[in-house]
Length: 579
Image (cartoon, rainbow, N blue to C red):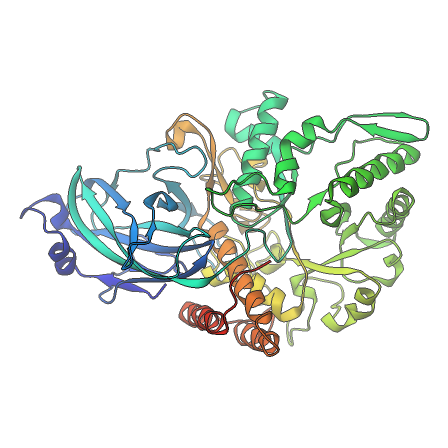
């Protein structure tokens, strides 16, 4: 989006209310998604809403309303159909409108963060999962305070390329107050529904029950909530591991394990097959890009081998094996953990040579015989002069080349090492990509750009609902592991808090920006496939925006201009769609 805003005079000219009406006390402006608008930030005075998007892409912007007098009650926002000059139409039900909520932070995550109210939870007007009207709209705009509204526009895959026009309508107490013109250019190419960059973000089903129901209620609710959150992540192009965490039951005999897949398949099979999202839904045909093996506790080694073999056989039969992994250990420490990794890895090799073993560790020759997917800290893949990274050794990117020639894969992750683990981080913990609430918006979006620059094949993140199991109320207490929102990208949307009849995940602003970064990656991927020079050009753009893990483009306008230039280049070269 090209950022812009409106003065009150322009707003009133577009839809004049009666003199002295409550709308007279409102002013507003628009801005792109890469801005965190504080409640007391000053207003703007230029421009209009201008969006560019591919087919099968989400493109967000923000409308910020500000009260100039007494509180204005009953404020509502709606977006009508977008229509092209030729009569092509993007229906209003492809637009999701959210009131931006604030969380009050009491401790900064690092010296780059800060205390006070920060925008993060996105409270839907009508939710995207059940189509229920929630109580976040209408709302009150308080005197002298900003109230941002986040608006997601989804461009369906069959949208005709070209320019579309529409408007954002603001109402007060059921009466039209003013409208804001909206123009969208749809590029003549289509993004794939399934992310080209594999991801695996953690999800804890038991934590979901704790926050949504207050206790463990039933397996049925565990599976339902786990599936709902998995769908929510996939709508943002993210795959999860964990989820319900319930492994299939097994019986043993005749040298094999026979697993009952019925319950597991109801939870995830459609998401692996690409049949969960139909042709009329966003991201039709989207599939999980990764999935983890779930292992029952306290199996003997022989039964562990049989159990894992049954997983590999089943996933091979269903065509899912290329996305399966065994998360063998998390951040091993020292020789004792290494011995355990080797023991578990050798059991996996006995089970099936094609069962990939994933380990969160830098390349370690002593473990090479059992590891297939190395997941390094983003802090530990290049030297940062003058700063000691939070890793014992830095293994530079070129060192992985020989392992990759053997078939190994390289993923990475960011963690509390980006902001300071259980401390308010100083210089060593600044400049990194980060998913904490009080980091810059670009810090949430930059990981896929870096993945392209460093040729890293996937991203892992330890949890999306960490605070659900560690806080009485994630809405007010998000400070974990030294960071605000570390491991928590959703908020529990209970009917008591957000209205409606059904529980749902409330998405964060950070989750939306991670999605935007994954869509940026698709632009780079499309450009790289355009012709003989496309790959070099994509590499050049990625290095321009994200040359180093600790030094990347901070200016939102520069990143957005790069994305727009790449879109123009893809369109000029005639690339129509992704894989």
